Length: 279
Image 1 (cartoon, rainbow, N blue to C red):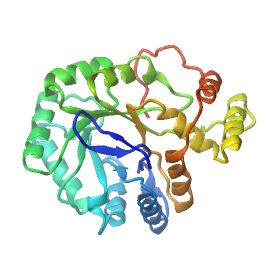
Image 2 (cartoon, rainbow, N blue to C red):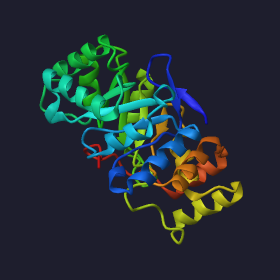
Image 3 (cartoon, helix red, strand yellow):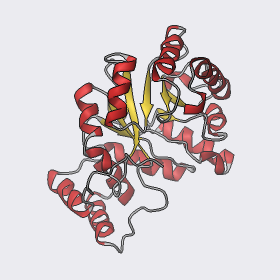
Image 4 (cartoon, rainbow, N blue to C red):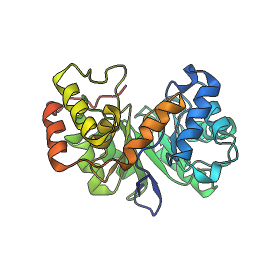
């Protein structure tokens, strides 16, 4: 599994990691097995959040005995992101995950609490060794500029954002901003939500043709396209081990410039939206 730098520090993560949104809706043993299968195949970056129902509990079970292999990320919801609320939320996440530390802790989206308070709590947690880095999620460029000022230069490790073939809004400004500042872009919902291109559509046919040329799957090709820039990693969710193995296969896939150009044309970038999409 290819690995890439995570934020401005020396740490690296797998280019294809594991998301856990809605994983608690799946059959629990299957979900745990899927996460463990992903770890076996090198997808050691696991992302979760306090908002994701029982996902942290599922992750805690899956990583038992393997914590040191894993780059573990969770998130605080904005309503809890006061200084004291952030501290308490982190303790709850650590307890659910059965761990003493997070590798990165994120503010899930911009909220009403002052960023200075949230980030001061992040720094306190980092000093205590309960988190090793921190970042944000669903931040557009204007939000990132404010966060950069509030948190200090070089402190934001990542920005986790919606990114899939049919939703490429981050390419207008967010991705370039993050690249300029050394902030890793983490693509969530990289297959969309029930909207992966049908093979009967023009774009779906392009995916299928490229996949056939590589002996790969369409989803592997889609993932590889999304992480074509070295600033970006992806966190697809899998709730069964077969899907986890399929996702991991994207880590070793290599697409040619011509294939990337075909995909770019098949799934063209829409005009820049007024607000950054999130789901």
